[in-house]
Image (tube, rainbow, N blue to C red; front, side, top):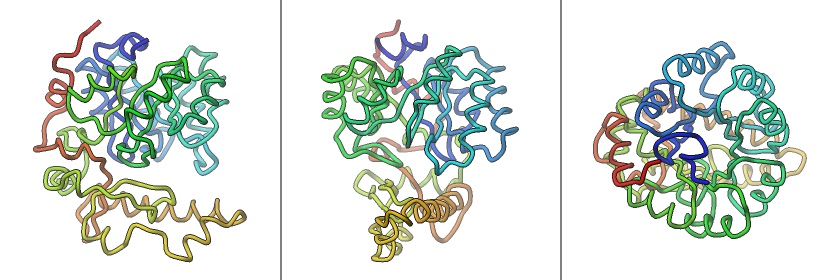
Length: 316
């Protein structure tokens, strides 16, 4: 089943949940343009703010949207966020970084769909067995925390071994690439980077301009910000910081006893750097983006970006 039929939308596209970037305006613009969108629960500091965002979207549209939930122990807000998503009956939840069994069980009891981020076949089989409604196949061309398997290879691998819908996530910036993913057997695509430079994104002008000024060749992976490979624009600040963990970081990240706490501290410090860069001008600019940065040439409204992305796609 394709994503558009699964969710009852016009085109099989999810505007990706992006840390610090996704917001209510972006979700509403996506729904008004015939696609769906999701935002990270962690983009909202308090439960009241999260509730307000969900209720505002629901008041503006009856189309389905999703919320991305970090389900591992590093998210101290997990329990409360899950309660809120269930209480407010969000149409679908995208789980990341952990065991989604509780989410799937409780969401399905309320008719809420659950899509799970996966980067390989092993984990995909596990979440399928738990009852996931779809796999978000995070490939090697994704922005943010990317996988290691190329897009076509990952979709093909999952298609041959899993029976639930596959959503290809990473590297999509044009309508031809959407069609290509569908031809591989994907049920739909998740697209993020090209929407960073949208009018609706409430980030610094410098960040949006960087999406225009830099290209695919300027995207690098760093483990210095969260302990896991993160794709960022290779700005002077990133070059100065380096992309590989130093000896002390390596020891902390590989020590059984200290690994969990070291990653939490590293992620906290790294996300603070990213937050400052995304929301205001700073001399240490660290901006997340994926290879699809190559297709960003100016700041545009969401509806225009989506119109180009969906041109020529067959609709329900």
